[in-house]
Amino acid sequence: MKRLWAWGALTIGLLYFFLPLIGMTNFSLKMRRGEYSFDAYVKVLADTRFQDTFTYSVTLALCTILVGVFLVVPTAYWVRLKLPFLRPYIEFVTLLPLVIPAIVVVFGYIRLYNTSSWLPLTGTALGTDILLVAGYTMLALPYMYRAVDTGLRTIDVTTLTEAAQSLGAGWITIIARIILPNVLVAVLSGAFLTFAIVIGEFTMAALLNRPAFGPYMQVLGANRAYEPAALAVIAFAITWGCLGLIQLVSRFQKSAQRPV
Amino acid sequence: MSFLTLTHLQKSFGPTKVVHDFNMAIDKGEFVSFLGPSGCGKTTVLRMIAGFETPTGGEITINGKDQTSLKPNQRNIGMVFQAYALFPNMNVFDNVAFGLKVAGKPKSEIEARVKEMLKLIHLEHLADRYPYQMSGGQQQRVALARALAPAPQVLLLDEPLSALDAKIRVSLREEIRQIQRQLGITTVFVTHDQEEALSISDRIVVMNGGKADQIGTPAEIYNRPTTRFVANFVGTLNVIEAKVVDPAASTVEVGGKLLGVYGSLAGREKGSTIPLAFRPEAGSLLPGVSDTSALNGTVISSHFLGSVVRTKVDIGGSMISYDTFNDPSAAAPVAGQQVSLALTPESLMVLAD
Ligand SMILES: Nc1ncnc2c1ncn2[C@@H]1O[C@H](COP(=O)(O)OP(=O)(O)O)[C@@H](O)[C@H]1O
Ligand SMILES: [Mg+2]
Image 1 (cartoon, rainbow over the protein chains, first blue to last red):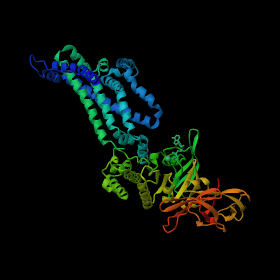
Image 2 (cartoon, rainbow over the protein chains, first blue to last red):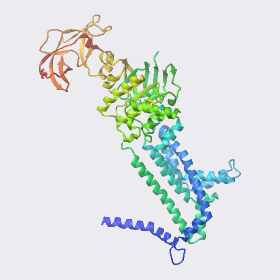
Image 3 (cartoon, rainbow over the protein chains, first blue to last red):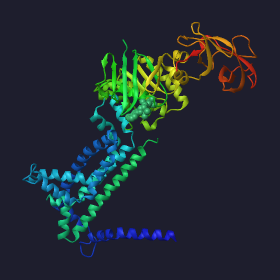
Image 4 (cartoon, each protein chain N blue to C red):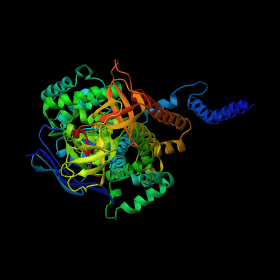
């Protein structure tokens, strides 16, 4: 009896999750009247705006990942090494982006960095891009920090640092040659999550008026019938691809893990 | 002129004083062990030499140069940790090469030096292995090679054998000592295992509560301990009460027998009671009651320990242990048997408290 309930609940859950997806995919294939085709996909992929916005978002995602890694790895490392009593507070700070809506952050940015401010970042495209990357970095912070911190827990940070120091290494060498390679898998999973977040982000890009993939999806969705469905399926595939890659690298890590 | 000197070294963590006025001069090429119970400050002194802790007071010099203001990565000191601490992302070759790469040595030189080091520890065939693919003993040998590769001025080892099992522990300590002799490297070895310290050191520093209780060769430490703590910590010790008879002639009385003791009784009052200590292997145990200066007693029990037989004897109310080598042709003492223990003055130690 209990089993039956469990299976029932699972079925309902799966239907709830997959039915819209199936419906959407089905719809996206029906552009040509009376038969299935990839017309909608071809159209979307051939659209230069798709190519431009997608390239733009991918570039920004890569920048965000780089900034995130440079910010988070040394910070998490330093906190573990020298300021362990600060860990709960740092963790709290990294969780803030989950409770502060992106729209609040963007309005804060626009107020602080508008053209008549002391640092008029919104005045130029490059400045706005920098602002956007900063915002994305913040959005990805909870995931990146957690991933890296968990990765650091698997190595003896203090002793490895001291071993490297006694061999003459300075901080940059230690972080680049010892710490980063040992948390690389954690960094990669943080990076894929960051990528997925940035590709789908709408609020920040729209309010800062940058040609990103999120706003493009929205515009397309408001004006077309079949293409948005195709686009949604593509976006889903990208996100799932990222999640799959996370699984893949963590499996790789497990097989390379020391059997201590 | 000593190579490594520690002068009035002190360390406090907040209000707790962990190292009090530690003084030590170590010669070039010498192998010195810090021996003491857990928590007595051995690691802290070692970490101050390495630069991982800043002394609260005092001075550390190597080859005449003050080290106090140097960072750990500027000191050129090799360090081996209890937990091996090999870099998990690098194979054996890269681990050993790390210090040389950091120093910017040319590739050919690095390759030659790493090969030389791996040969020294007999692991040339494992150059491509990763740390998780090796046993603890192998990992610790790689850690040793890694520490030695950049030709450090001083080698520090913090309980490097504690995580290994008994057999490997013995063979690796001999290997460490042999490599140390071969390279002539000044070495400080921290351990809480007295046998380990006695077997491999040129000199031993017995530490107690953050200071050096006694510094000496293994034989001095074992045979001539100056404090009760050292005597107790290094080896097994019997203590009996004795009455001072003549301080000038170094004679005491135990159970009506007159005994000469090693060392001075100066400052002890005639007729006062002092603790007298000796090792279980000192003297000889004879059957029967003696009317010479040998002490009379009764066998309480006898334990067969393999190469050694340990006999517990009651001498005037004090329980003492007596060790002899196992002799298949001799009968073991039995409980209740009357015996006498003859002790030479050299084996009787007067301990300061
Ligand atoms: N970083 C530290 N902060 C506070 N107390 C410490 C620290 N390191 C060591 N101690 C204390 O100093 C004492 C000596 O420690 P240690 O040098 O590690 O002893 P040993 O190596 O002889 O076992 C211990 O009581 C320990 O608790
Ligand atoms: Mg210790």
